[in-house]
Amino acid sequence: EEPALGEPVAGPRSESEEWYTRAADQGHRRAQVRVGMLAAGRGDLATAARWYREAAEAGSRNGAFNLGLLLAREGNEPEAALWWTRAAVAGHGRAALRLGLLAARHGDLSEGQKWCARAMELGPAEVAERAARLREALAEELSV
Image (cartoon, rainbow, N blue to C red; front, side, top):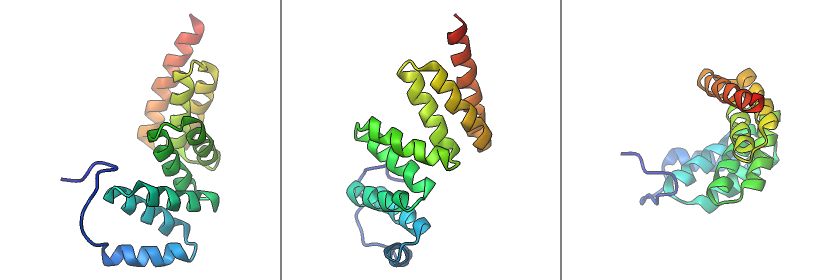
């Protein structure tokens, strides 16, 4: 059974993680995101956040999205929204959907619709479907 995010996992790093880390140390953004994901899987959220931030600051939309997830989980929603915005503007559909959900939760229905429309454009399909349902619900609320 896969461990939950943030649940510590014992054991040494795998050989593949060692190679990913070497590439990440050289500035490879996808490797930085992968090392972050592996660290998160082991429950080392501080290391995960460091690698996600490094990738995000270098322009990785996946790094920005994942960093936003960690920040939101820690209760830092404002900074999470900044990274999700960066990711969504760069074409990350899940980040756009997160922003739509966040806006809706804070009562900014028109902003939520805007991000849902962006998520629908970007996909993938399941994200576009969820965004369409949320956008429709927000439209109904705005028309009341």
